Length: 149
Image 1 (cartoon, rainbow, N blue to C red):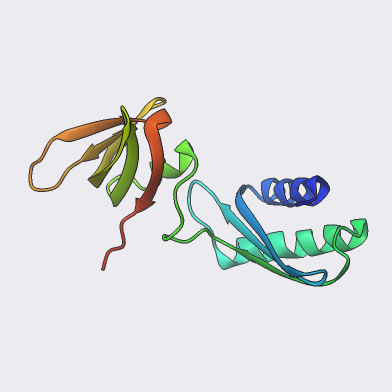
Image 2: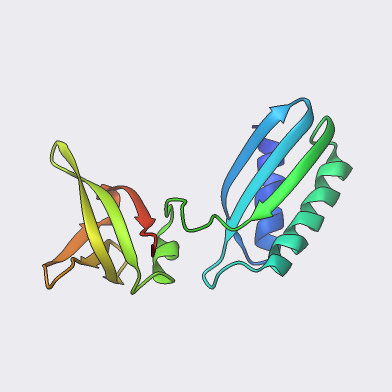
């Protein structure tokens, strides 16, 4: 992806108080689809997505960053996307989570509820009175909020 395009997307998200989580560029030249996933500490509204979308469209067109036509989609990452940043965990304290972590040479999964976090680690309370597992952030391979169904 063009670094200028990524910078414009990130700046537009930040202008409206959001963090850029991921950009997916697909389709062909002249018929591109740009999927932008943003998040905030308090969640994402449709109004926020609309504001970012308008800002981005204006800046992409003015800078001629995409050749031909394109479709722009701005949304929250959704519950199915992995958590990527420490600040994302804060709003999910008390929710069920599945964390894949590195442990020596193995990758193991820990499931439970996010009990707490600090600058260096996530604490997960395992089910049925199991142990509280402290997982250093640097050992997390992937974590996702567990689907409630």
